[in-house]
Length: 373
Image (cartoon, rainbow, N blue to C red; front, side, top):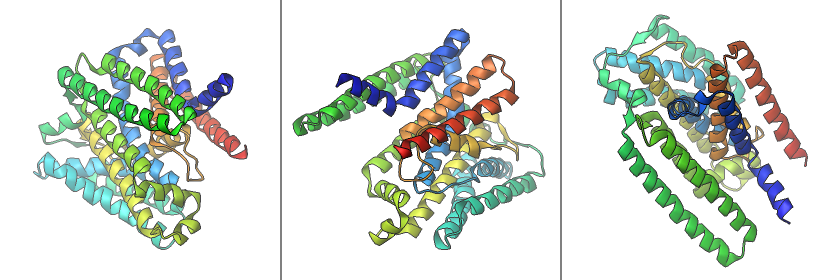
């Protein structure tokens, strides 16, 4: 019985175990990897792909795809910097960019996909080219500098260590309260297997909080982009797991016609999903421009592949109807750890692309094997 539970735990948490093994191997290969400063840099680098990955998870859950997110990152970075050069304050330029770039592009993609049922691959592939062309046209093919010095704090700022520790303590307390409540409910219902999963979740969370204290509780503190990513991921986890909208996404990905017949407004749901992923891609572009203190029309190139890779590695099925935000976060961390570790070890960028491609292929192969069982 215990052996079966152990095998089930390994199967359920395969990507998390892979992340731990990979991290330990890199730490042994190069001690620099495990330093708090380097891990903080990894977390900051992961946020850009991770935020896009949250939106991509929702898209793939409904059996869709969005290839335009990388170009949306680039055009959003260019637009927000140009708005500030035009004399618009950063606190106005940021939401304006989200609406003008993320909102409009998302509505365009969603309209054709939802209203006329044009394959999302075609529509978003077209938008990939359009958005990149817009970025090149607006910038004149050159980089654009940031005019508002306050803008840099959005992507390059830190929450000081003491407030960071307070935030982590409050988060741990809230999670502990939810866990105790869940344990009580499961105990009353006699769900022994679910109790074991909750206990495993508690151990994983405790290790995660301890690692967060080690990485962010000293030095510069918690990077602002990481805090933004955590808030977005937590909101997405709540939406998918505890709202009607989240249940509609799973139903739509499982069987679109059945979802339609059950009364789900398929057109509106798809529109919301594609607007959401474009908004998140635009936000990633803004954060990237802030961190780099400038924008290039080529920013975000190939980000769509990294986002899809994070989602697939995290266990979300490309066929739709199955997946979690937590899995995508782990997938994004695996990609970030791989990139950072291979750079520290001096692996050529050419080989890095080959390795990442092989990992994506293996993840899809594993997904296919799971469906055959």
